[in-house]
Amino acid sequence: MRIVVDLDLCQGHAVCQAEAPDVFAVPKRGKVEILIESPSSDQRAVVDDAVTYCPTRALSIVDDGKSENKGE
Image (cartoon, rainbow, N blue to C red):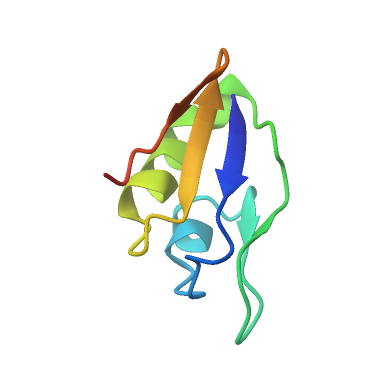
């Protein structure tokens, strides 16, 4: 699993940080920073939630060579 972010879509709402603070950071008036690009399988549920609840659909997960945009 690898996390991909489209910084053109990110508006810094920090929903991802709220869902998975060990994986995402959003500085004040900034855009998401991925702290762990390839999180462990133990973190999959919180990363899935972060992708799902991203209000701008800026996050996606890449698994086994295919992209999954959970926000759609």
